[in-house]
Image (cartoon, rainbow, N blue to C red):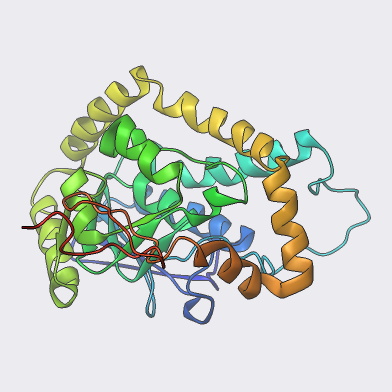
Length: 300
């Protein structure tokens, strides 16, 4: 397969896969996910590859799904295809995307998400399914569509940061910086933005010194422990739960707002009341009238 929406290179014992729609903030679309799945299995099959680095071109890792248009569509062959007309259609579409993303979990080679800029909504589906996540300190990580667009169609959050922080972020749609994400265990580590690539490449260097079969064995036993805790089953249930969320009154109100105000206007209206949109793990979240945390609240 030739790639249009990603780039793929193998060098120095690693495959570097780059989401390559910078003009769309690397928004996910069906063609991109199909290319990503193909590239991941290619890397898994390539004996030169010890690990995979997943990153984004431009200013962001990935800002979520492309809600303005999902990119190239297959040619019309006269066969009626699923859309989003019925509940089962909705679940089927979500499960197809989930299967592609779960390649990161199911492949034998370990993966590292190199997260900078925005890692929002569907972008978190990719990052949190990788084996390790290294983020820039100022990265922005969260799932704002949980506020009015449905539930989370993938949900690895609880396996990274535990049930309470998963609820704190999923129930509000608030975001955390890369630095704060590391504090709560949502990502493995955060580093200054200018050191992010060096940090990730250094980790890949260390895995390049290990036999890929041993890397696979050690990845798979840890992933099997997560499967015993229901990780794979939960992803299928998350797709069905998201389809349920798509039928909530609040979601219908969102679609009406899009018709009236456009995507950008609907997002501004949704998020304005949340102020700075941030969750803060280590300071009191006492907020001013505009919803911004008062930094010195509680100090004497």
